[in-house]
Image (tube, rainbow, N blue to C red):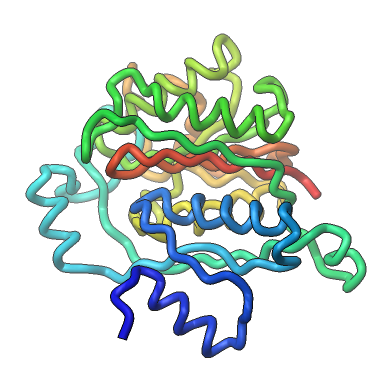
Amino acid sequence: VSNRCDVVSAALATRLGICGPVQTIPTACAAGNYALARGVDLIRSGRVDVALAGGAEAFSRLAFVGFVRLHAMAPDRCRPFDRERKGLLLGEGAGILVLEEEGRARRRGARAYARVLGYGLSCDAYHITGPHPEGRGAAEAMRRALESSGVPADQVDYINAHGTGTPNNDRVETLAIKTVFGERARRVPASSIKALTGHMMGSSSAVEAIACALAIDRGVLPPTWNLEVPDPECDLDYLPREPRALRPRVVLNNSYAFGGNNATLVLARP
């Protein structure tokens, strides 16, 4: 019996007959993006042609009680970027994406929903549960993602925000986006789907990467549900209540986690 954190992944690999590298990356709420970044690295290095990457999270009484004790749980609704937001609500689920080398995908006639252009990782090195108050780590993850992708900030058409609905996180993420995008920050649509799905913790950024890919494929940006009275400190285009018809070319998927783990994935139209 193994006590390593990849025991569940190893069991799945055995069940599915997958013989390549198996790894679990325990970076809390950013784990999905970290797993996708690892899959991209394995493909680019030539170690694998195909990778299954993502995250899964089951509802946990321990997590529920922990967030209540941290005063981070909303008493009624999750309201990302709203002036009356009071916290997150937990969800559960899984999101797995098939990553494949482009030439191989073309040869077998696979349908591509999006291309992964690059990613950026950083660590706040500030606090175990709270983000850096100036959003330094969040901004650095976005900058590194754009640099690794070779995409200038003025070509980003949509940002899937981490947007947990907690007072501190939403304010800091807004500040980080302004830091990276400057004057253009208010013209880049952004939204959080966590009011619709709940915060799925380890699977959240993987599910949100799927939402980004579908936004690219279908030409619809998901809304920030329950955003009714915008917070003056969260004054970006956060798509309140209604989806928006727009087929983005380049999308950022932000995820930030306890321990200061930050990850931004860059997806583009195939």
